[in-house]
Amino acid sequence: MKDKRTELSDLGEFGLIEHLTKDIELTHPESICGIGDDAAVVEIGNGLCQVVSTDLLAEGVHFDLTYMPLKHLGFKAVAINVSDICAMNAQPKQITVALAVSNRFSVEALEELYEGIKAACATYKIDLIGGDTTSSQSGLTICITALGIASKKELCFRSGAKEYDLLVVSGDLGGAYMGLQVLEREKEVFKTNPNIQPDLDGHDYILQRQLKPQARLDVIDMLRQLDVKPTSMIDISDGLASEILHLCKSSKVGCHVYDDKIPIDAKTSMVALDFNLDPSMCALNGGEDYELLFTVEQKHADIIGSNPNFTIIGHITNASEGVYFIDKTGAAHQLRAQGFKHFD
Ligand code: ADP
Ligand code: MG
Image (cartoon, protein in one colour):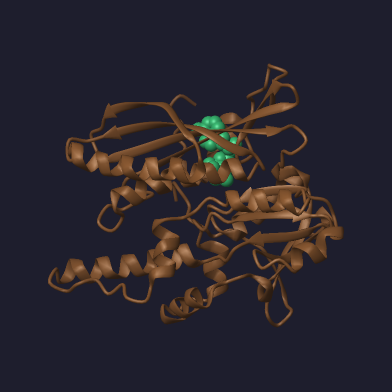
C-alpha cells in the first residue's frame, strides 16, 4: 500500500474535493454550511449570517496575459468571488487578496492589476481589508476571499430545489466561451505571423463577457424587489450543464431542461456557427458566464417569465426521473457535464 499512487486525473476536480473532505465534520454550531455550496455560511447572531467564498486564478490555467489585460484580470478576480456571494442571495461586503508573483512582473504591472481590483470594489461597494503577498517561481497566482452578509431567512442554498419548481437563468449564456475562442484564434494567428494585427472587430459583446464578467448583484436586488425568493441558487462558472447537475444532486431532485429555451445572444450564436459549434453546446459546456441559475416556486411563473432579465429554461422533477436535456426535436438526452475539467 505504501507505494500506491493515484493520479489526480483519476478523480477530477470535484472528485478530488469530495475525496479530501468527505470525513470533515463541522464542530461549531455557528458553522451552518461548510463545503459543497457556492460559499460557506457562519451564523453571527441577530438572525444574521456571514458567507465566505474563496477562488483562486492561476496564470496559464485560468488566464493568459497575452490577451488578458492585468486591469481586467483584477476586476474579474473580484467579480467571480462576488458572484459566489450573490449565489447565496447574500450582500458582498469585504474581500482579501493574496498574490504570488514572479519577478517577471514590474511594480507598474501590479499597479494595473490593482486598478482593476479597486474598480471592482467600487462597482460592488466592497472593502478590501487584507491579504498576503509572496514571490512565485512561475507566473502570477491571485486568490481572493469574499465575505458577505445575509439574514438567515434570505439565504439560498444549492440544496433547496423542490419537485415542480421552475428552473430559471439570468441574462444569456455562451458569450464568455465564444469570446475566449476568438481570443485564442487571434493568438494563434499572431504566433504564426506577429505582423498581423488581431481581428477583434465586431466582437465587443463576447469579448466583454470573457474579459470583464459582471457578478449579478443586480439580480439579487431585483429578486428582492419582486418579492421572489429562489428555493435554490448557484452561479454559472463551469457551464450550465455542470451547474444544473450540482443543483440537482444537492437538492436530490431531477429536472427537464429545454434546448429551445436556453437564452443565447444573437452575437454569441453567430460566432459559434462561424466556429462550427452548436450555440447550445457553448452555453451548456462553455462556462465563465457568471449568470445565476435558480429555482422558484410555480406561483412566480408569470412575474419571472415576463421579466426580460430572466428565462425559464425547465422544471424540477422527482429524482427518480433523472436530469434530462430535451433537444429541439423533443428527444430527451441524459444531461452530462463536459465543461472545463482540471486534472484531466
Ligand atoms: P465554486 O465553483 O462555486 O467556486 P467550487 O466548485 O470551487 O465552487 O467548490 C465547491 C465546494 O468545495 C465549495 O464549497 C468550496 O468551498 C469547496 N472546496 C473547494 N476546494 C476545496 C479544498 N481544497 N478544501 C476544502 N474545500 C474546498
Ligand atoms: Mg459558484
